[in-house]
Image (cartoon, rainbow, N blue to C red; front, side, top):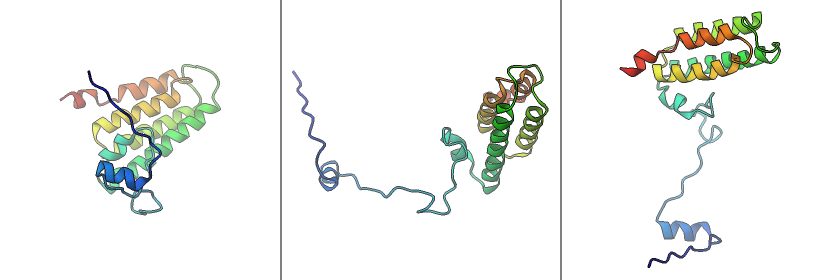
Length: 142
């Protein structure tokens, strides 16, 4: 028979550090480290982790602004239609052009397309289909 006893979590930070042997590290923030870039896709940290060059990080900033513009254009659009609005089509086209011009890896491009498709899927069938058609799936598979 194995009995486990849980300790009280009311101890101080120094006693916990002494018990676990772990060293405490200060939190890294943009204020503490100005060279640390803010993640334009905070719910998807792997996209930023795979962007290893300044050019790729700039591309992520541009693409995040494109996705935000797509969401804004979608907010004013009527309910589900085949073609959406002119603003939805224009922002989708800008995203596609900026994605094609970027040097971001294929896996990140695929994930960025997920974000863009989610922004327009509820109002523009053709925008959604355009985004689905540019997925780099064969390149990712090999």
